[in-house]
Length: 312
Picture: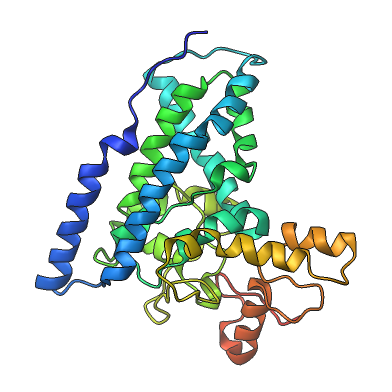
């Protein structure tokens, strides 16, 4: 079987990533742009990025092997051309939106995605804080529709690289707002700051990769407000720079919850598949509860984007 050979877009972009980080640091230091770098935090992000690359090289055969297995059942073979690439990019961006939404609403997937949100700083190094365990969640199943429609897995991997490269530059506070027309269609630093924020109104919002239109279509778009500046991290910050803890802490916590004594099989299952913050005894708070409590304290905010109309 002949497998097309495409360059690894993200690896080719590494020099650009490093140069952009140096430029951002210079802007923050000398031009007093918004943003902050902390040495230990940045080193952790760089190690997480390197670990993600290594993990992909070692375990990437899982997702690629699945996609190649699906390829034999394809309905069409769309070939390789610029128009197919553009259409596949848009369709794959929609696939990424749904993966990203699942990653925040299903704890099993959140366990691998949480490390990307674990920094309490928001700068270009945060973009490199990637998962080491993404090949073990089953998220590669979402590749099946595009492969069945005739997009070769190797071409799809090449196309997705451009999506990842795009997402790098939106991890910054140094850029405030882009032109209105751009903000209306594309994901931007402002939109993505919302996604990384722990403020109640911003939880579970702006899942877009490249095109913010998906969030607007599916009701998950929340604009950044000057009066409610984003606070970064996770709801319960882990306060560590240890890469191993960053990579695996939620897996450990999830299985500890699921295998605690005295639970029914259904309760154990729910600890894996319910949203983060769910507990069998109601002692923890998920994003829905945090939003409701915020509205309870700030009734004037009821019904604003990202917040419920009323308190249930």
